[in-house]
Image 1 (spheres, rainbow, N blue to C red):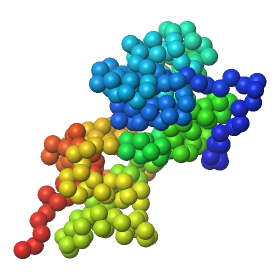
Image 2: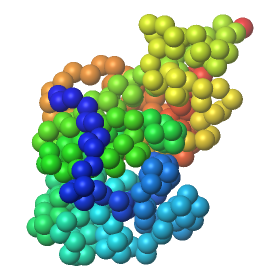
Image 3: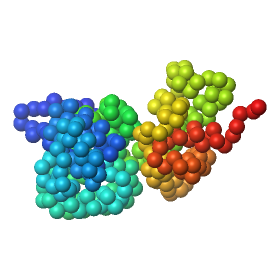
Image 4: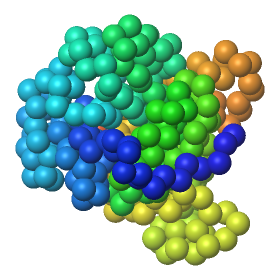
Length: 307
């Protein structure tokens, strides 16, 4: 694995990327767009959700009528899309715009085959697409607490370093296209397990009369600490999961991608396998639109304190 990217100094002869487009302005996209505006970029965006477009405008961005229109007014497009279908549709619209110098940064958590198909659609029109999934939640995105797992042409990754710095704390050049998603699935495998283990520990503490927020503060400073404990732990008290940073329903897609990757690589994963029923139960209990911290509610309902 290569060293973190450092934002290069801009020499007078270079043409820095100043116009950035956000394709998908949901929880992640909205936060990224706002930070890019604050970093001095001219930000435009498109999302089929009208409310998302209003939020983009309020953050200082310029709404566009379609992905194709967006492609015509920016130097780089950052995709934060919910499904393979949305990506394929966007790739076709962007390819039709004829902007051969355009760079497309695909940050969504989608299958490598789907990303490769979109890349090839764009490549046929001379447009470069990179696979650059993100490590971090929507809440982290607000504070630029994201890591970019960049993969694809090295020259394009280096050129995008200032853009990455506009919405993230760090970025890594992981080499060939698709390596970004491989690293993302490894990260999400850990997230899936750590989220459930956080709920287990905090529920134990609650049963002992220790408030989750107090447990998070103390445990985060010790050997048992994790980012999921720090980020999701506070949402496991007072039904904090009602304010989502990653919805359980969307997370199901990520779980399926992890399971498929593990099966293909023939990697035994007993801890991940044990976490799957907990997330499925969260769906069954009506938590699809809630944060994945709702696994705490699942574990709580699976048992009752002794009388």
